Length: 352
Image (cartoon, rainbow, N blue to C red):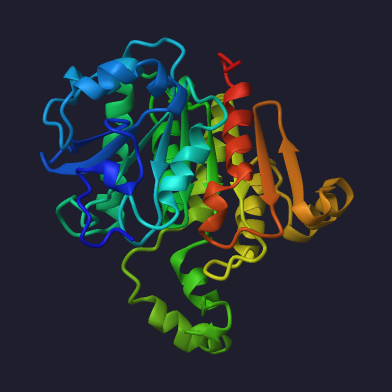
């Protein structure tokens, strides 16, 4: 619960004094998005005296702070850039436990950078697909150009609507000349696109909103024309994978989705995974063909769920489907920690 709490005082959300620095990142139109830089806990312990000596609260010049220097000056530092879901702020719900899970695999080296899109929290403006993508690209550029972290030491992490933003970012940078490749990416509870999400969404997993209208294609398609922001993740993930394959750029993509997710049904991940895999095949692969391959190759982990891995000479696409975790609880679970660890361990250079 973040109501009535000040986001510029991260300690009020359970962090240690100055473990988190609150600051702004400028966007191209000279607006700013509100961000948190979160230190990994062991690194904090090693520099606790210096951190305790500094003032708390919002920081105007983040470059002068110990937290920033510990990221910028360490050639072994790793960074997870976190793109949160549709509701709330950087501190809402299960996001604070999520930050801990992201850095838990290497608590001396893995920093987390998270931010509020325009119109969320302390970030001014109105949210839109275009604007949120501009904000996200600005944050990634800050990490690379200001914090000085090369893309090979960055993991892109998104949850819910954040997966759509993440895929927009990944495709954007993959299409640059020269292409920009990250250590990898982890997507939790993605969706195919907004129209498909609307067609499948049920309150608490039981009460349909517009899904009954999906049985009337003409009416449903007409209503779809009123959807302003499409967030077509199926197209963006295909564009990203195709660009990486064409340019022989390494990629590591993990998609995680709990079977008991009431908010976004896990079959969205089945479709997202298929669109990603299909993009690796010059002649394509049908959904049914992939399902047959998964039946033969998928690892059944019993109560822990299942894992399917698709490899090419260039990249790895993993589909991880735990039995439990709901939509948000999963973000603090070990399945997220190990996904980040696996990406960094397989990157060049690897994180030992």
